[in-house]
Image 1: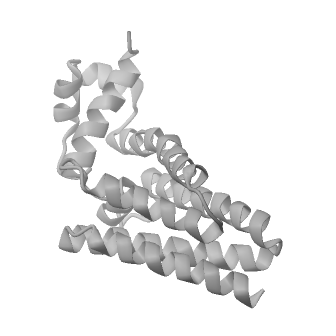
Image 2 (image 1 turned 180 degrees about the vertical axis):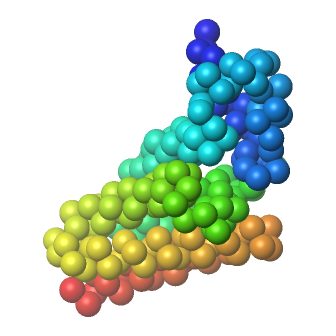
Length: 191
């Protein structure tokens, strides 16, 4: 049996991811969770706190998926990085896929850089970059090169998310994966 807080977060996840955080009212989340608005506000002080909690609830599952795709790939570092993009490509083909929930939320709240959800989204992106830099360092041995390469991969990934949202075409993430693989190979050769 899920807690009331988890029911609210499940409802927020479905609605915010499908429709956007600004388009969905607190009333709609309460209705979807089958609770009263008063109960929702008992668990979350404001819609802003609910939006931040929505992103926090997506943080570990998303990071775990990236790690699973990376760890499950055969081959060298370049193949393992490309596998992250292959996993994203497959996920983006699902009819309910709406892009990166973190980037979409940050974009919706771009005029409010101090919003708690913007901070959560930025922290998620930094966690992914730090994890990837750690994997790169383990393979390359050079922390400086690993950090630069991880940042470049993040740029390719976020660019692919943007292009896929614009064009609704997973081929963009496939090409970003190819570029990431080539970038990793070139970095290894240069070292």
